[in-house]
Length: 638
Ligand SMILES: Nc1ncnc2c1ncn2[C@@H]1O[C@H](COP(=O)(O)OP(=O)(O)OP(=O)(O)O)[C@@H](O)[C@H]1O
Ligand SMILES: [Mg+2]
Image (cartoon, rainbow, N blue to C red; front, top):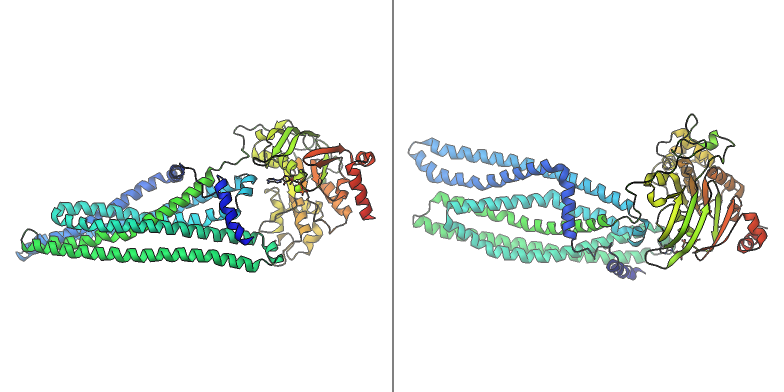
């Protein structure tokens, strides 16, 4: 198992357009567009920053020229009594130095601020998009990869933006400004300096090429480590129950060693590069001193000019080290940005309509088209306030219209079918494992769109309903009742974020959760993750019910949602269900036939088809599939 993970990974990577190794050819362009788009709100800041950097580069370049002037003109004039001739260039040098320092300070600060803002904008966009991507994207892509996008890739971009980008900009402006100054000051010596640049460039290019290779290796290695960690933690129960710990450790040690080797190679390259550039820099200095000294002896160069040149050589070659490193960082940051762009480019398969059709307002006692709200008084909960008028105007009409569905490019899991569920009806869906029950309800809550045909809610195609309306109208509770970090009350309130404490209490009470909550150390405020707050699966299930009850949808889908409810008696489960379901259209998938008993209608599915459809009593009497299931269940209870 362990060893197949990576091969499976690379195979899916090649096949799926969403994965890292197969980026579209114009991705670099799109990544740039993304960057421009993210930076646009801070336009003025970037322009100001460009000026600061330019000021810094020029200031850096002209400083030594004043030293040359002070030495060659100032000192001789001062000897002749004109002290101002020496003082002026020195004061100007000081001023330039101070101004350069100020530009440096503000430039650095501004770079930091702008980079942070850009990162926040990018993170927001990426995280928002990842959450919106269809369930099918998440089924294809491992969550580890998506975590890697949002951690190590973001980190690469951040490191470049906050550090290397500025070094690169400063280095380039400084080198450009210095090159111009050198040519203006003395062309002959300038040529000597530039000649030293040739081997330097060769070394830089070679080093950069090696570094790119290493970076790619480290990135791949670290991404694998992250994927492995995320998946191990996600499946920690299976890991522990099947004693996978040692195998996992071997796996991660193996991947870590690849990471270590790649990092070591990268460090060797950096050391080699730093040493050779320093050597070349010093040799250039010697060459300038040699040629310059010879020119001074020949009286065609003044000593101050030579000093200035020596100062410049340092400043000219100095940034090169950082420049090359910055280029490497640039490459890994742009690779990271490209991968992020690919994720951002993946279109959610279930697309929100641009001009949605509102669902018809619902009659009865509910507010005008505002689900879950009572027009006046009350606390928003029918059961608490409305007693017996339970079926009044409850639920919405659900229609499957010549629907067919296949996952991806696969064979149809649901061959063409029609199904009408009248408003307020409770339908039980039964059938063997893999029959297509979950698939059918996923179409109803629009986790997927049908391959053909339409699913309609009160006559409106789900594809025309705004996301917010749809989420308010149709809610699905599944077996994996997921609790988020936070208190029990907060977890219930997810159903309707603006619910009052009293609403939350009423919802908990309605589903029979109150006795459990009273046993918890802090009641409703108990943190579900902290010591003593851990809930059993059945309790988590009840929290999900309370959530759904609070959300008060028109259509409620329960997929195996009662599977964990063994703690209360069957009767209690039925009561909780009846409370949650009343006044809605409901589809329940349950293996437990006692929950089926409360249904108005039973649908039996087999291999994607509905093979029986009728009231439970009628089906039992007719002696078909459901009747056999039912009598088997009766026997098991006896
Ligand atoms: N995400 C998916 N991608 C591809 N095929 C899938 C996917 N989910 C389910 N299937 C396939 O669709 C068929 C129906 O699955 P579905 O989950 O609807 O069954 P079910 O009736 O809910 O079964 P169970 O009672 O075990 O929950 C199965 O053959 C399954 O392999
Ligand atoms: Mg299922």
